[in-house]
Image 1 (tube, rainbow, N blue to C red):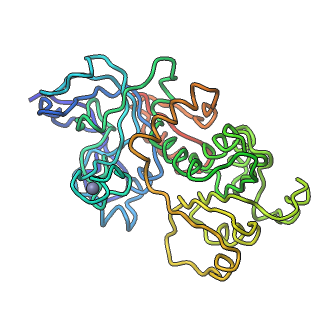
Image 2 (spheres, helix red, strand yellow; image 1 turned 120 degrees about the horizontal axis):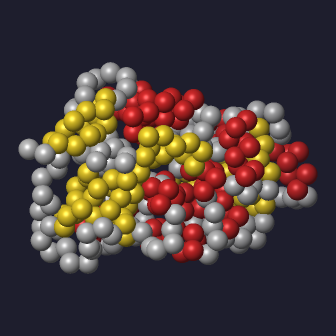
Length: 345
Ligand SMILES: [Zn+2]
């Protein structure tokens, strides 16, 4: 049996192990074997590394983890006639059921039983990954390979940002982690007037400025009233993107939204919230939960925006060879980074 290198959650404990594991079998019908070139660390992978309560109840062990990657087609199963060996590809990390009401209606991002690559089935932190053909996404010529490695979280950002019309609107982004940073850049790219991004981490506030925020502010130190005065805003933010999963940040957002504002929520809260729902009701606010990416409209738009000048390269702040994966994870866990890439070759 052929072997390959992989980062594996072997036991119920903190960390991951670099191991030799069996290489996936030859692809079955409508499956594609992808050789991984670069992978990126997601917040989800940090939860898995930390072996927190969510990871403990979700992962089957042992498991090859990881789901953000770029690589090339290594082999195609029967019936895959539109990809060639060597085609540069990435993958959609949610394997949808294809049977539920939403899947059948073409709304696969709302599948009731999605299975997560690198969470519930073997992932991309490996020399090879096997995926169903529909989950394999061809990378257009001219797209930077590192950017292609983060199409998955960039798709989360695009799904969040494009849910509402941003043209000429004032946008508040709470949370400048990697996806909040990419949301900031997209909001700027598609024509928002002001994009204000908040965080409490000085490095991330700096990155938000680099990604195109009109203002990037420390939410613990600056009143939103002051920010609005500084920008000459009279009424409130039209659009909110909640990326932090932080209750205080959501409360602050609700306090400075205009009547009729619209909010996309992507940050995941670790406990039930204590917020005043009357803020939402009396201001007529629309709240929209965001999960995953629209398959594959989000992917199409990500490519189109990159081809028309969207620049998110600055969100990638660190790169490590596979052998230094521990350092890569430490960097990501420190909060002093944007996206961290692991080079698999
Ligand atoms: Zn489904």
